[in-house]
Image (cartoon, rainbow, N blue to C red; front, side, top):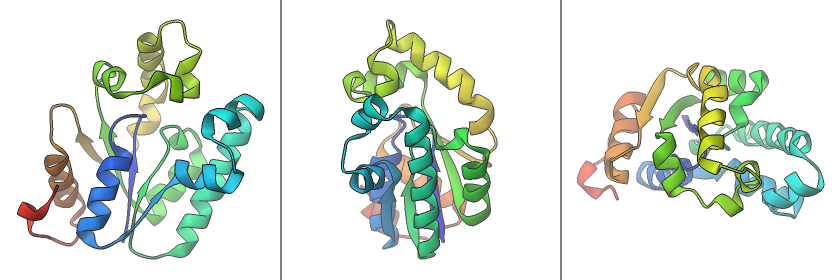
Length: 176
């Protein structure tokens, strides 16, 4: 089984994904980490030097490489991976996608603005977050399973993902 975590930046995809994979004894992959490794430069450098279009192509390639592995895994995706209908289709066809959601206020509180190319140059990063969430809302809403991460512990989020996906049951007291 492949569980993919989708959603906006700073909703917990990487941190929750690591815990979930560990508890299920699955492999863990993070598309942003793999893009950085494949390109040899950071994501802000990719955006700055080569542009968003180039980044999105790398993202699509990395997703396909991961899906080719076909093993039990948890996959943390980048927040914008769902902008591509091809990526959305692949995630829905080959994985059990779970949308992680947080409010714009919570995202703003959690995020390191300077490390996020789409926010770093914004005059008002909080307003930019709200605009981006609104723009991506229809893409995010195409996924069946949704977990709100505001005001929840990582343990609670992991438990909710396990319940929604029907993934292998584990001793919940051992989580996080």
